[in-house]
Length: 552
Image (cartoon, rainbow, N blue to C red; front, side, top):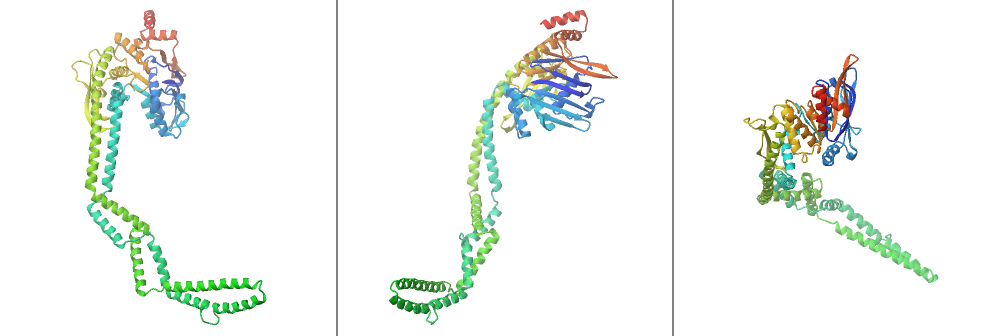
C-alpha cells in the first residue's frame, strides 16, 4: 500500500503531505482545486518523464516522495526488479521509499536512498499501482495481462506450470538440434576434412616423435666427431701406448706391491683402492667404445631421418603448432566426419525426441486451454453481474479466444470484449471510448478479481462521470468492497461514493500573495460532514442529507 506521499513545489503545491489508509481513500474538492496534481505526482513516481513546467513558479526544483508497504504476494516481483538493478537486495519488510527530485535541467530518482533509472521506476509502477483514468495506461487493457488474470481467476497455476515445464524441455531439444545442425559440416567441407585426416593418418605421427627424432638427428649430424672423440678417449684410457692411463696404472700397481711388502698394514688398503680405479677406467673405456658403435649410422639412414623430420614439420605447420595439436586435430576431424556420416541417424533421433516433447507440450497446452475456457465462462458471468451494480444494467461481456504462437504459457491469446448497451456490438475492452465508462468497467473487473490480481494499489479518476443516484451509491459500495482486498484511492465528485471511504482527503486552492496554492489535508469527522454537504450542493438540507449518508 501507499503509506504516505509528500509533495514540495509541485505545480501549485508548495508543500503537502498525505498519509493514506489501507482501504478505500477518497479525494474530493472543487473543480480546478488541483486534484490533478495528485495524479501527476503518482505518474512521476511511476517513472513518467518530468518537465520543468512541473516546478512551482519561483522555485528551482520540486520533490515527490512516497513510502510503499509491499504485501507478501507482490514481494517476489518487486525483489526481482530491484535485484536486476542493484547487487544488494532490499529488505522489503521495511517498506520502499521512492523519491524524485526534478530540476530545470533534469531529474534524479532514488529508491531507499540509492539512485535508480526511470525504467526501474516504470517497472515498479507497473507491479505496484494500477491507474484508471483518462489517457492512463491500464494493465488489464493488455491481452497478456488479461490472460494472466484469467489464469489467476481460474486458479490454473498447476496446469500453467506443467505447460511451462514441457515447453522448456521442448525448447532445450530444439536448441540442441539447432546447434547440431549449425556445427555439422557440408558435403564439400567433409571432403576437405577427409583429405586432411588422410594426410595425417598416412604420416602416422606418434606422440613425442618429433622431439626424439630431433635429438637423434642432432646426434647423427655429429656422428664422426662423436666416434673420433670416443675412440681417442678410449685409447687414452686403455690403449697400448706407454702413456695410456692403463699403462700408468700398471706401473703404480707394481709400486704398491713393493709398498705392501714393507708396509703390510697400509699396503693392502692402497692396492684395493688401486684395483677399484683400474676397474672404473676399464668400464669407462668400454662405454666409450659402445657409444661409438651406436652412432655409427649409414648415409641412407641419415637421409631417411631428415625426410621424416620434414614430414612432421609440414604437419605441425598445417595443423599444429605442436605434434600433440596435430593429433588432437585428427581426433576433431574424425569426430566431424563421423557427425556427417551419421547425420541421418542423428537427425532421426532429434526428430523423435522433438516430436515426443512437442506431443507432451501440446497435450498440456490443450488441457490448459480447456481449463481457461471453463474459467472464462464464470468470469464473464461475474463481470456482467458486477457491472450491473455500477449502472450497466444490460452490459455485455465475452472473452474471445485465438490461437497464439506456442510458448511456455500455452497456445492461447484472449481478448475481453465489452458492450455498454444492448444492440451495441461487443468490442475489445481497450477500444471502449469513455474514460468514465472504462473506469467503472475496470472497477467491476478489479472487484471480481480482487483476490487473484497481484497489483496492490488501485487509483480511479473520473469513475463517477455521468452517473448519480443509486448507481453512484453502488459505485461507492463497490469501492469499499474492493478496499477490503486492495488499497483504493479514488478522486471523486460524488458524495454517494466519497461517503463510503474509510479515509477522506480534501484538495483546496486558495489565493495567496498574488498566486494560488493547492493544499491537501485529511478530514476529521466534522470536516468530512461539511465536505459531503458541499458536494451535495450546500445548505441545511444538504447537511442533513450528508449526515444521513455518513450514518449509512
